[in-house]
Length: 371
Image (cartoon, rainbow, N blue to C red; front, side, top):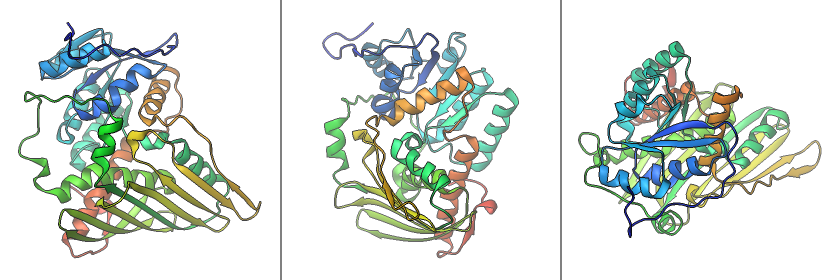
């Protein structure tokens, strides 16, 4: 039922493993078009069984491109499909938890886009349900599958010594949309797409914190462990929003996080980590060019500078393959789990609350409610 003349089937030469995780994708919006659908086709251990979206015109376009076995306009119907073992959820933030709960109750594993949700209590309820059912929920913080960040994490664990300071920055670029237009596939839209009530972009402070700080905080936690408090400063100049977030880590280190949307330059993302035996410098790129982070690890004891070489920068495919390996073969989960998703959301809400309280230190353990 493809649309001749509009789109053509994607031809990808991927040798699939004998045992593949059978997945359904919920959503045909930007993130699924630009990331998850292609990742499902390219992943060696994933079989794309179904795609679901209420916008049938958009659904048919994706069907023509990706050739799933089935398509659904009703989410409940897809969840009732006994062939499907797991669901990828790539829809609006406000729908993440509710749709993940539905999938868990239907006996499906879940990979849900970040942020996990918009309210702490709903996320904790999801965790309780998933644990009761014994099903995996992984949050789509795909940068955990950046080979450069993985290399840095091992260096931190084995060689850096006691860490004093973590500095990180996530600065979107005003030229980002031009870059993305060049490297992303053609993106389709529909007036029939399901949208959350109101306008999430009406409050850019909330919107940017949810969408962009999710990555910044998860990277910090992936490399450094738990954050216990934040203190926030914020300034707006025209259409540029900038946060400086001082944080304390459970391991005793201090941190400074810079979130700016958007700078008048190329995409600027990375981190520095200073330890008693070594230092890490890292530069991370616009995710849509699928380029592994450049990382330099300096070990004072061995007098060595170590750099990884990882040509495979398709973080979305790598995270999906790992998700499948955990489910199919019991591999240890290294992707963001529900605790990681809740902790990142706590950090986002704490940042917002600190700002509302004139930069006052806010402890993540005290955070409740949503943003």
